[in-house]
Length: 399
Image (cartoon, rainbow, N blue to C red):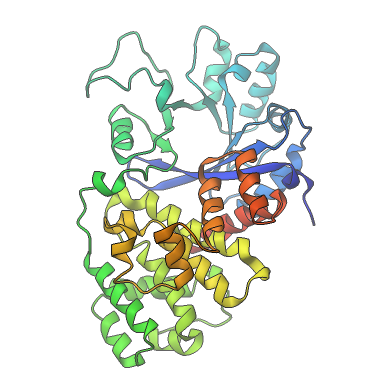
């Protein structure tokens, strides 16, 4: 059944990452194509429940439409749905009773924006579990480690938004942030102290080359046996619900016989993008998997199997330069990829480039920008949003 609200909004997503670099929730940003348009919160919650059912993983809703947020605050979200309330809305006495009722119903509320105890009704402060403070608005960001301005007090824990680099992420945790929101993947090549070419990555690169050359199964198995943990990960991925197989695959040989070399290469690509042992690389791995799944969702039934496989690899490989600390033109001399994938990653051209640009947009942008990229692909916002929700569903099945 078509959900009407998906035609008028754009969904973008980002991770909520704790100080252990674990993704503890997904932030779903909802922006309206036309400001002031009347949108139904119950329809949005219906769509969200398909991805995050009650008792499942947590999602934090960042609603950028005031009308939709007002409607949402009067609805009854599932217990795993957190609601971000901008400080200016929380400070409006007209919303006090509504916020108190949401809190009473068990909804986790996050105060979005620097809290002002003098303007926020005192009785509302206990309703908010955390505050969300943007890095650009954080008065503590220039403090020396271990020191704080006595004039800056925080009565509740805070989550930092607007973080773009590993250095900013580490500094935020140093100031006491419980988690960060966003994609700290900029400058990660120079910021990370990890060494490139870890053993499991080297094994994966060799496996991909051998699968591309259609080597005999015995030779592929011999390579895989060099890294038992890698073999375990591969079996876990292939047997996940996202893969949709009706039988359990019990061995690498069985996987090749059932899947064939082309489909196997897809999952080796996924493993390559998630093989880093550097904790600071987890947001990069999180992003690359979702890019691949999202680009595949965008192509959907309109593309043939080869195209779906190639756009998946294109998305998954789109952050390999950060994982390997090498530019794409150098990196792809050792990892075989289809020509159209090479064009998108190295030259920023070719038929897959618009899909990659849309994938990047749904990580950070709002409705007008996302809609512009979608229109370039002759897609509607509803189709794009369905691809976002399908991506997050498939990603959840892999984890």
